[in-house]
Image (tube, rainbow over all chains, first blue to last red; front, side, top):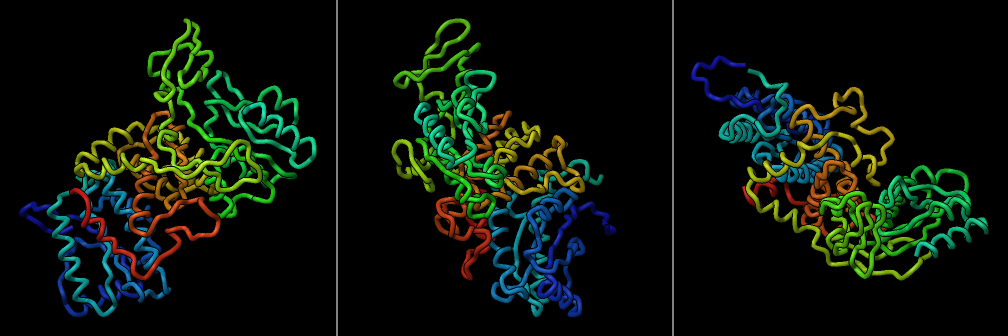
Length: 148
Length: 323
């Protein structure tokens, strides 16, 4: 992934970004030349409520160490109410993951608008640091997918 | 009670109100009761049973049965009526085609708890004033009734029939149950302890799909776990991830629709406390989005298909409980 001599743990972060706000926000942070870690892999979705709980689990299965879901601010959804449903769903899912003993800091929902390039970069920096502290995902990984 | 039910069924069959009856019949052993459909008075006379082991929730059979020609008579315990209401609300059954006779609920018995006492070769179990008289091939044994009660009955939430056309016996009321105690206990453990607890439970899973098949809320015609493209269709879990995934997704798909009938844990051949996952969702929904009992009515919106502008953020999960 990157040239790294000191063998520091580099987490893999999957970011689901909604097409209308957060993906544009990521774009803006790029055009503004703001840095955010290369660990973050963005997956664009039409709306944050497109994200099925299975997507989150699959990301962990395929080797993600943290999953962050970004969407429009509540009230700003392109489809009026998509992110409200996301909010309820993800609250319950994250609570369940926590209940099963999976580290709660590996998952996050953040609202990033198309104008918040700086917030996008800051969020990603902060989240990557948090996951880096947790170390590799071991409680919800698929051993068959582990890269040595 | 059994006599009254058979008579009621025979009467309704004879006057043409219904053409079929859903009830229970004896299986291979006396305690091995299975749901069954009866079409004649003779069949009822011969096979119909209602005793301490008729714990199966038969409301799911109505998904298919209510779409056939003629009305169907069904005997429902209070907890089963919640499931029927939920199915009616989701338009999975044709309520006009169903004649519900409400019957008193449990507590019902769990044969595994009797066997766990080392009692084998059981031929019959009789309840004599809350002492079980168990006839076995090796003589008679006794044990207290309440030591053999099913877990789901021990934390009964309601004795009230939420839907019925007729009642045999009296209607009860909703109860103050202690059903969230175990969930709370787990919530108060550390993350590592919870992880260890669930690993020891979920690693027993053999993916027989019994929990899914028995669940009255799981009525999709095409289930995600049968999808041949998913890589997880009809096969035993290969590792801890697949065990976790199956149980998270199974519970999530019924979140907000689960009436907490407890059938999933009852049928689990590995005795995994699956109802705890469902109850965790119910508890969260109650505390975050307001008290909600699935199946209590047929008009309210399910919590996951509803929202308010000032719902809590997902970060609430990170702020509460034990790390």
